[in-house]
Image 1 (cartoon, rainbow, N blue to C red):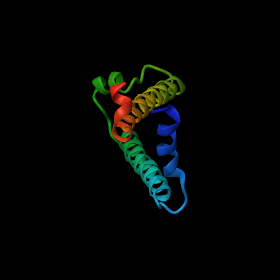
Image 2 (cartoon, helix red, strand yellow):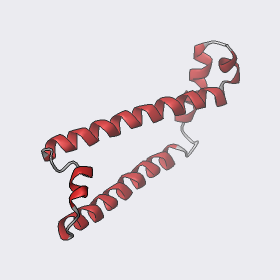
Image 3 (spheres, rainbow, N blue to C red):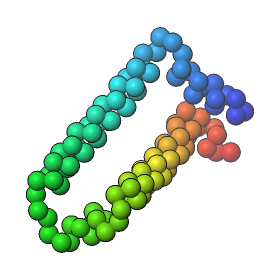
Length: 102
């Protein structure tokens, strides 16, 4: 089994008429909106409530806001890359059972 055979199986998802691309896009948009909703709720709680001093350390209040944003953004990118890499290996074993034996 060649590498191109596996790529052909993955590229079949891009064919027109499968009606899967729109659902993947809709899933992505739904996750983004849900994340924004949670962010707005947390922001409102953060602005309206007083928290104990321990929360200042857990939320990294001692760091500059830009640095905190970069830190969480970087962590999110790393987690997404790990998740994509692991799911790609699962797809390979699922779609190309012979590739996992080689």
